[in-house]
Image 1 (cartoon, rainbow, N blue to C red):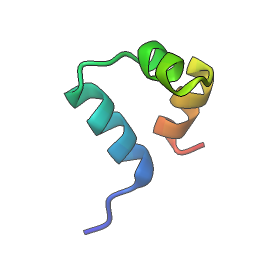
Image 2 (image 1 turned 90 degrees about the vertical axis):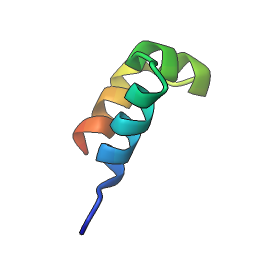
Image 3 (image 1 turned 180 degrees about the vertical axis):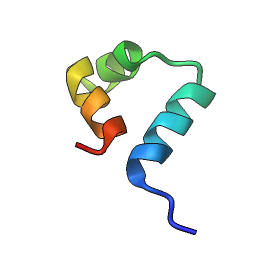
Length: 41
């Protein structure tokens, strides 16, 4: 079973009840970056 990093990021973010914007702020990156990570771009 292959679990992609992008799937892990989204799963962990949603389990933590964080929006992409909140995660981006915590990591000091843009919300666009988080979105790209979650889409595997």
